Amino acid sequence: MKNGVEDAIKELDFEQAVILKPGMILGHREASRTVEGIAQGAVNGLGHLSAGIRDTLGQDADVIAKAAVRAAQLASEGKAPSKYWILGGSDIIKLGRTEWPGSQTPTETKTEAAA
Image (cartoon, rainbow, N blue to C red; front, side, top):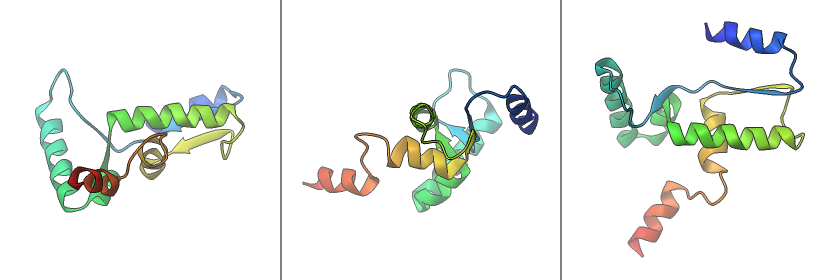
C-alpha cells in the first residue's frame, strides 16, 4: 500500500514532494494496542543496548515530525536532493534529531548532566 501511495504522489506531478518512510513510530499513544505496545517495548529495550539498533527499527514521533519540517524547509530552499525526496529511517534521524537546530547528541546531554 505504501508504495502505491508513493506512486500516486509521483503521478500527481507535484513541483516537489517529501515522502517519509519511518520504521515503527515510537512514543505514547492515546489508544494503546497490545501487540504494538509489546513491539515498542522490545525496540526500546534494544535501544538500551544500542541506540543504533533502536534508530534502525523505529523513530520517535517527535523526531519524525521535526524531520518532516526540516525536509520541507530544505525543499522550499531548493536543497532537496531530488524532486521526490524519500526519507528513510537514517535520514529521519539525521534531519529530525542530529541536525535539528539546537539539538544535542546523547553524549553532550550526559556530559552536561555530569557537570
